[in-house]
Length: 409
Ligand SMILES: [Mn+2]
Image 1 (cartoon, rainbow, N blue to C red):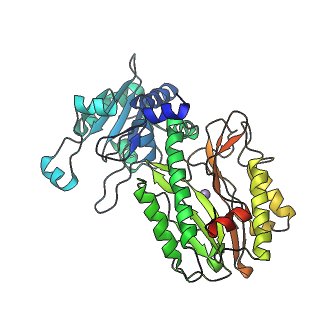
Image 2: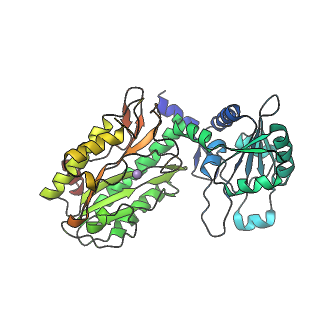
Image 3: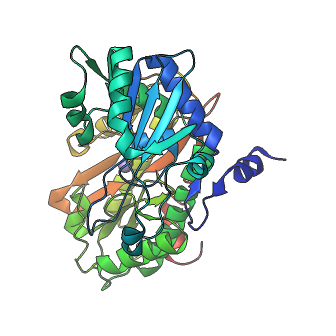
């Protein structure tokens, strides 16, 4: 059995939804790891539900539980002989479920479904938290979680509050094989969407027509949503980094930057290609495109364990030096890489030495507003024992892009 087959078997779809979860033991191992590292009491909140806003779970909470419902709290209490982990969730409300659909209630069924040892009613949280905080002295919460701020009022005097974000980020930085499988699915879906976009890009077509086929491909493949607003920027808008109006008519002779990513089972892809609207790069476009492509190759050549995203001799500096040596340094105005994972700009230090199973983008660009030329090429890679594996294996050479536009690919 290949490793990928094994991973596919380990990923089980939750009943009644297309969302794939990792094995419950994986989430449990993360909770144990975090509790062992921090000690004391750790409190992590689920994202609250908001009316008429599509629900999305908090990333740290999801990473530790795989639980997708709102208004829950995780308490990891390391003050006893063994870790006591409790997930607090609201009691079922049958009247409300007529509006929201069936939810999981506390008890043995929920313990089996989530793999958390204890699943208790939410209204028991306050008493249990105060008892744990009194024993622990130090309480770890996640910086920025709104509900965490409110905990302070109810905590025993002398409770020391500390931040758990850094410890969780260090865990999230190195992907499990089961996370990698979800990322690869998000990336595959995004490559299919690029292929579909290349099929509709033409003089006279609107940018939003490309956006529409992209997001159609995402959703029909089971992706929950775009991981970030889809960027289809043509002509002058190819030089605007986060352009997302996508309402211009594409013209003969334009370049169009398509920067998109599906979110699949929580995990975000991020792939950019720059296409010539009429199917053929002009001489000048070709020149700039090749510089960006070669900068990307120089950056990729540095990817291996121990390398860094930023700093001297980093992946970023390889791309920057190449573009500077070609004379376009002032037109490369962003970083070369960011991690991807549960967030498209995933957590983790850009100074950290790379390790196998870290996943990030490599995306140099040159933007010349006075010529309406913007070129960005962005791919997703995973670090391996001796280098990297390209996850977004999609046309990027000039003749490959032109062949794709001509439908000959
Ligand atoms: Mn990116």
